[in-house]
Length: 131
Image (cartoon, rainbow, N blue to C red; front, side, top):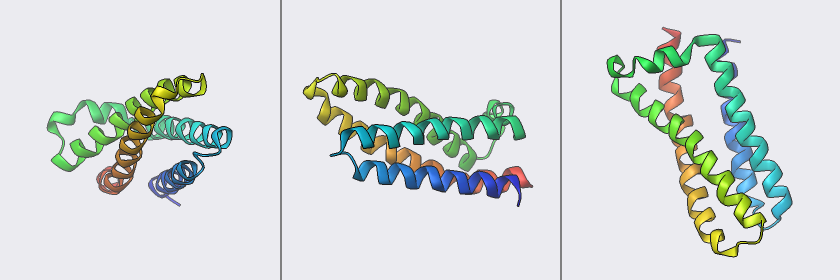
């Protein structure tokens, strides 16, 4: 199995875990554990890709990259930044600040949408790396 296939499988499993975690939002402790695990796993996946492909060096050449790769990098970096915002807003909700529930929900929808778009565009990015 190629490293690209291994990374794509992990990415699919992370995304599946996130979607399942969203369905568990009414069970707060379960939701927190699932979503935290998925975000941590996703960051570990990024580190795996970096260690095997020097992805950051390639990302730094973004101005020379094709448009589709730039789009993938935009969604990937934005997803990680949104994870930080999700953790911050999630901690506020856990501490009892119910005013953040609606913000956390909308932020979660945006984060999941960006993660889905990261997954979709990763097929193009993986095919370009394999060439």
